[in-house]
Image (tube, rainbow, N blue to C red; front, side):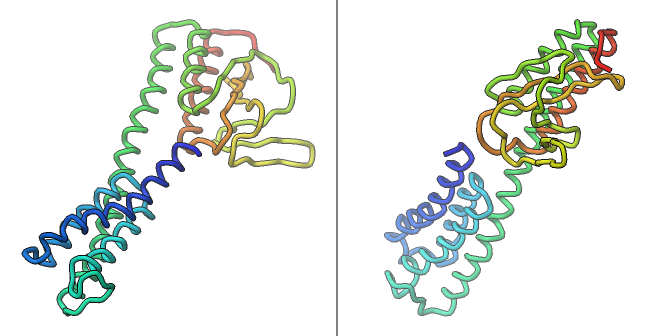
Length: 249
């Protein structure tokens, strides 16, 4: 099971269990605790789950909170029934507010993640440009890009091959897509294909070589990561072209 799938599974389990446990903790205080205050505590539990999970986990937590609010904290107790009209309204509001707040929490978490990822990707691109500006050898730029590609795409390994196009390998294209071109047939991939994948290095309109990516089995990285990988390869090509190295026609 991948890290993402394990994380999603844990989030769903938390969505089911956390509201139940919070409602259970509130049982000894339900005689002195208003329905509104109990609902607010459960909304907090929903937000906590949504902050670590995806949208489905947030919605599940909101539904779970409403169910256990009904079962434990409204009369008649330990039954899925609500006698008081005010408690019915509170339960409905708990569900609606829980759904809204959980989705907002998930969105906020994703925005934070995006900001962090974008900063890391920008740093990677800036590092390559800085090497070129400092007059480092094109080989140093190529090596830097090779290491960045391993981390960026989660590769098992990566190597650079100068000036040859042996074999017909799946290719990471300039638009971030992964394609295999064969006579009369083109295949697009959503998962990493078996074996190596090529990322061509072109500078000044000339082909200088390719990075041969050795991926782990599984889904392709995010599109933005693939586009950054293409940009890094382009920077390596620019460094090779600026140095005036020989190229393939």
